[in-house]
Image 1 (cartoon, rainbow, N blue to C red):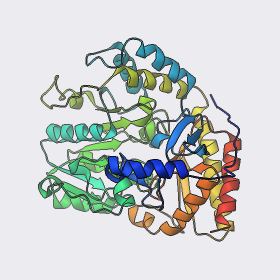
Image 2: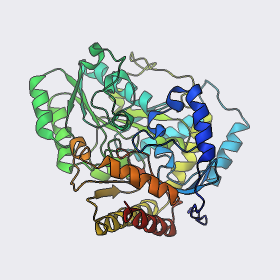
Image 3: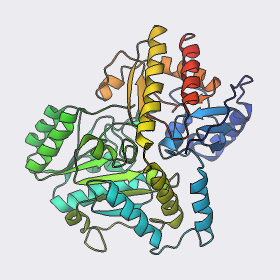
Image 4: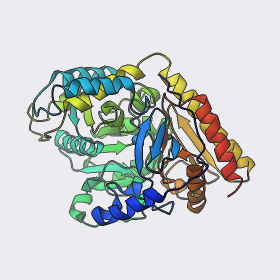
Length: 439
């Protein structure tokens, strides 16, 4: 499944075409982008315009080639533009791109998701992770008859109003407040606590006894950099939600099918009541899903009274791409390989960084990783904010010139794929050593 493409260092690195294109886009779209973190605000300069992707590589409109560790923010776990996914899409497109009606592909992907994810007995497909989290929250409130939710500082669950409290991802990257335009009445029922801090959660349950519908979290954080949970923290959340008749929701939009085939819940052995998914189950196309126990999910319309709908939900293209992707990552050795190459990548970068005199820390699970320009350890969002953002910006641009593409923010996780080779990893570490010795 691995795709090997010769790596050419960008010896004549220029972004002239990207700069011209982005200048035009500034007049056409807010900030010149359609998602804020793409705007390079935290690293300075203007974003690069991508022309094509394949395997572990991407090329911009200036012809520069990069080893890609963003992977379309996670879904490219088998590599970009895999031939089997492209073939499935081509075959499916012959029948049409959207039906607005049930199709057999929905059944197939649903069966695959249910058999893989421990908590899911029924699933509802939507079009994005944001939609999935919105649906799960509405369902949790309806099922419990309560209104308040607990989320964690630095965890991002999409851009719906109720979740833009102490959010990570692009909100942090841009240094924005929670967001203008979000009514206080909507966020008044959203409580927040530091990640990995069970005492703070216990205090919230004490202060709002009988009012909390659910606790939602990223079981491994990817939206304030990559932060690993304490297993006892996850176990305690499971216990306290059960004791208070609240639901535990794992937002596995990033971690689902990436930390293991059954997601973070399989990896850590913690089964939530509801789970949200996205990214990988669409194989690179827009998709999301939420699912959980049958008695909870049967409240969703039309089986029950909790309304949620979407014209393009379960569209045949996304279903076909997701099916082929899940087939490929289910093959033996997938997660062992991802864990191996990702571990070598992170350990290598930290080693050359520390030898060059930088304070750095980081970690990985499976094909998801992150590192911070701070001594660490990083256990929560406050710890992550101690990172040297100016140094990260210099590192980012240095790596870009060396032909390595990371997420343009200290507060985003990185991703490897089955297309990344050991040669890719060696090249990346060597590039990091050159850059880290210069900054």
